[in-house]
Image (cartoon, rainbow, N blue to C red; front, side):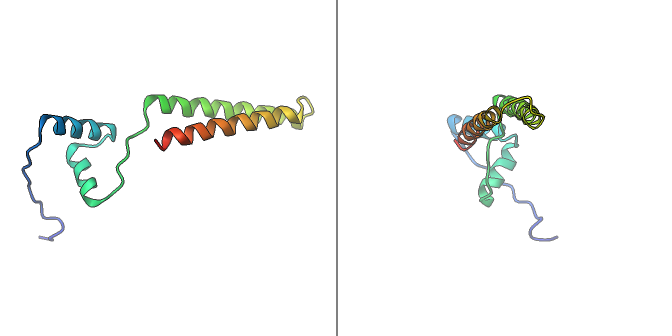
Length: 105
């Protein structure tokens, strides 16, 4: 049997607080406790998955992007002013900056 595929079983004792923390962190990452611990041991990055609020925010930003595209088409057609498009792009840039800050907390 390949040494890398051989399984080793380990028994550890955790306090109630440690166990609850492990369960909570693994759940946030949508991993099993075993997979979560294995990734930590391997030194791999373990990040929590985006929350429902973040997913909703992404959807809203997508809608804002669509609106900006509509403004750009209106500007190109001579209906809206170029200042409208610049203002929309500035606001979208501000939203992206906020999302970046939230994602890196």
